[in-house]
Amino acid sequence: MLTYSSPFPSSFVFGVAAASAQIEGAAFEDGKGESIWDRFARIPGKVAGGDTLDVACDHYHRFDEDFALMASLGIKTYRLSIAWPRIYPQGDGELNQAGLDFYHRLFASMAKHGITPWVTLFHWDLPQALEDRGGWTARSTVDAFARYADTVVKEFRHEVKNWITLNEIRCFTLLAYGYGTKAPGRQESAAVLNQTYHHALLCHGHGVRAVRQFGGAGARVGLTDNCDVSVPVTETPADIAAAKAWFTEKNDHILGAIHGKGYSDSYLARVGPDAPVVQAGDFELISLPTDFLGLNIYTATYVRAGRDGQPWEVVALPPNYPRADSPWLNLVPQAIYWAPRMCHEVYGHASVYITENGCGYNDEPLVNGEVQDLHRRDYLRNHLREVHRAIADGVPIDGYFLWSFIDNYEWEDGYLRRFGIVHCDYQTLQRTPKLSARYYADVIRHRTVL
Image (cartoon, rainbow, N blue to C red; front, side):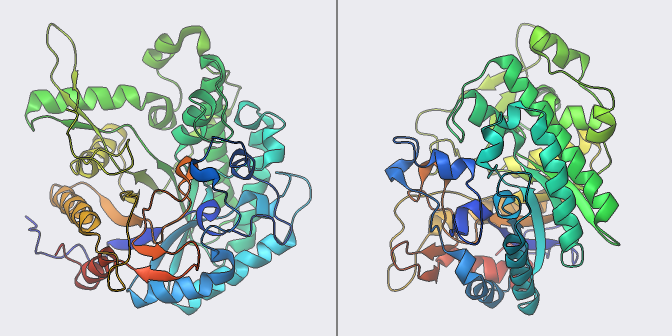
């Protein structure tokens, strides 16, 4: 039995994560096309403060400085994304060589600083030209993604061996085309929304196919999912069974569809006439085997055994339940234990990576040259304890990527919400490691929850 003072396994990966649209800036430089977030940010009232992605953290011009800082903290693994509009400014059509050249320079800098890349093919920045033709509601987007994935994997096969197909399908479908809170801000019918899920699953399949075809020796690939997470109110057999039943139903349309090699009868019964249109061969592509599952874990729903014959009961959080400044981010450290465990038990995953975990707060001023973010230190410590516990219980968690390396553009929250362990002054672009960065550096160095 591992104790908190015992080390993580020697093969366990510690890293940090960020995404191209949120940190790069240079939104219209070197031939990059407009993304849906470039357009959405310019619609009055859609993004806090009217903030745009034009400059962000200026990582496009400062990546070498950023990788030097990572290396100084002992960070040797970095999850990033490639900006689709930098590669194909119109989504398909003409290839932008300057975009490819940029990422070659970036990967060379990472190699110089001893940092291994984990690359996400799509992290929400859909080319606006594809949205103008229907975006995720149109099957033509799948064809465009297939070409983009082939191009990127072929181009960077010697520099990248760890690939992630898509980041958080729910966010760029449900939140973007259902609730309308994320770009492109549409509110579509249930049938159209379910079709966006299906098109995203097809793109995942093409990402896997591209890596298998063109990734070369040692290439690995998986999906990053922000599954709906349930935590049993008590760790008793009845509450655990209820939480697992809730988890299985809530994730049926994404993880269940991939691993069940089709939509389940229960899912099709729930959606009825709004079920997605499936063409011959779709699930042969969608269900291609992967090497790992990435999970972005932030919060969870408490579930207990149901009463009066119900399979479960959701327990609502009281108004004063602890949460971060991000209003959706209730602090449930057990989420990072139960989500990987359930994915392992329900879907049979033999390798899980926590590809994001972090917390967003608003005002984090510098005090004597440091942000004293003890709240983030506590969040990190409590979640790493649960990761440690899961490993001790036989859950195959092989790595952890903290979100995020640096404060950045937090989508519709603009620059209001800060998730970084490195503070970014958005006026001067000065980088300053926070207390949490020093803490995480110590964890990495000792490979122990301190």
